[in-house]
Length: 233
Image (cartoon, rainbow, N blue to C red):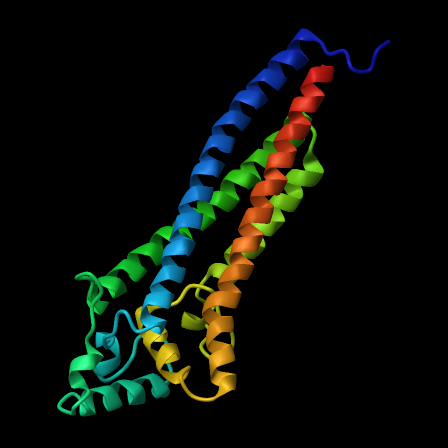
């Protein structure tokens, strides 16, 4: 008896699983694009501020305490900026690019962060559901979809702003406008500060991007494995 032969009920179950896989695969690709675009926008925002095209002060740093556990060093930096407002370089502290001010950029960063976190969570969930359907429907490619899930989960864990929860202990790839001002202001000192600056905002970002792409490639191999197995059936 041929082991590859399946009965009508098994074929019907496989068809149902494939329809569900098609739905989750479409949403997975959608959330992948959203996460990718958000990551690119955050990197562009960093370079605009770091290169001096957009300059400004973070309002949350000037108001007494800083929410979220930012260190006192951030407040000191903001106070120094306010103290020099009437100096000869005060005009250069506020700088816009094509009409985009730092306030606009800060609002954009907050919106992108919210979309990025939600899209990253949904991206992991869609891969998890696809993995469960593959297990139940015995569609194959479990090795690839499991690797894709764990890569996406690692990406999400490194993406979350742990510095807002565990100040001084953990750090995530997502940053706030206040953190961006703090790091870019402190990153103009010695070579060690400069290296830390680019590792924080570009190196960490590159790691997240590679994990995202590897997860998407693994899920693509999972799809090809399923198609090859269906040709046998």
